[in-house]
Amino acid sequence: MNQVPLLIIGAGPAGLSAAYRAAEAGADVLLLERSGKAGGQLVKQTHKFFGSEKQFASTRGIHIADRLTSRLEQLPGRVTLLTDATVLGIYEDGVVTADISGTVQKFRPSAVIVATGAYEKTLAFPGNDLPGVYGAGAVQTLMNEYGILPGRRVLMVGAGNIGLIVSYQLMQAGVHVAAVIDAADRIGGYLVHASKIARAGVPLLMRHTVVAAGGSEEVERAVIAEIDEQWQVKPDTKRTLDVDLICVAVGLSPLADLLYQAGAVSRYIAPLGGHVPLRDASMMTTLDGVYLAGDVAGIEEASSAMVEGELAGLAAARRLGFEGGDTSGLISACLAELRQLRAGPAGGKIRTGLALAGVYA
Ligand SMILES: Cc1cc2nc3c(=O)[nH]c(=O)nc-3n(C[C@H](O)[C@H](O)[C@H](O)COP(=O)(O)OP(=O)(O)OC[C@H]3O[C@@H](n4cnc5c(N)ncnc54)[C@H](O)[C@@H]3O)c2cc1C
Image (cartoon, rainbow, N blue to C red; front, side, top):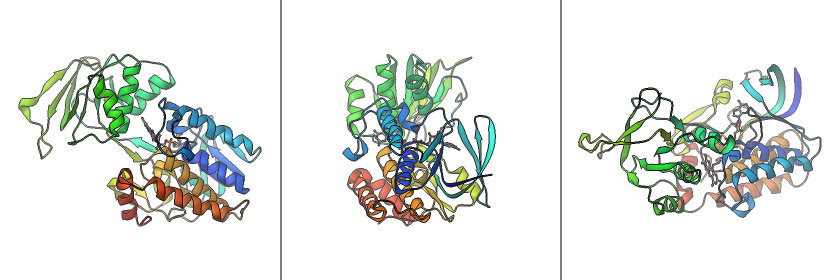
């Protein structure tokens, strides 16, 4: 059994930021990441990020990941980052198990921060198990991490930011985007992303859904149709698109299984992406000493994931008795920054969600 002061699960923007702030305050940190490199979703993002200057706006996601990771080197010996390290369980007695490069190890941390991000939602339709039907995350991984084209002609399902950005990235890679469709009556993502695609002649079809994928061995076509006010398919509007790739980008949900297993209380809050573990203003869940940060706390953006990570890192360090630097001042600054990031019309959904969760006014 390995005793560790602070164990952080997931080295995306939230986990990396939590590790930095906790270590800076004086805590020794073990940061476990299941994939082969740190950065989370950022390692797939070739576009320049929106957000505030402090959270690296106008920098490409992949470069933000590098900066957050190399920042840990400023605190030598404080943070141990292990990749290929998947946390398997958090148990009621506080023990955490992880598969680290093929060997299962047990830890007994004094505090834990869960920063595991999100999983993609999908859609049920005939043929959705054919090769060629992908989630947007898989498409990005193939294209941007492995340099593999997932198809030649794509139907994008979902006109939120992820659907729009991935459509543009597919176009940059030479893939023909036959259409971007969405069941909603308006585009969910930022108009700047939608305009780039529309200017290139891609039809953006609202109030449309995918009815079926067709093909013998793999996707060879997609049937789409308009839907009515009750979200029912209008049969006479069905038409077939000649595509070999259907990319489903219909939203994310918090990846909180570890917290549910440990007994954290959760609630279904639609504006936060589905079931979310409840937490207090310092990011502590209903489990004593177990914190969370980032998309696992509610689907938002990398900018807020970083600030939530810093907040959780500072709060966990303070709980462990580390008050190096101005911990209280930094905690107040994080809270103010989150309020600022969530101000204005773009933050309306998250404000509603957090108000329902009882943590944000
Ligand atoms: C196409 C796209 C475009 C985006 N554009 C923007 C943008 O312009 N601006 C912006 O601010 N945000 C943007 N985002 C959102 C942003 O990427 C996420 O909000 C952010 O990455 C969330 O950070 P996180 O650390 O909570 O989760 P993630 O980045 O998902 O990191 C979670 C990490 O936890 C690891 N993990 C999960 N389970 C385990 C386990 N059991 N054991 C060990 N490790 C585990 C995962 O491997 C992952 O590395 C975009 C997202 C996408 C998909």
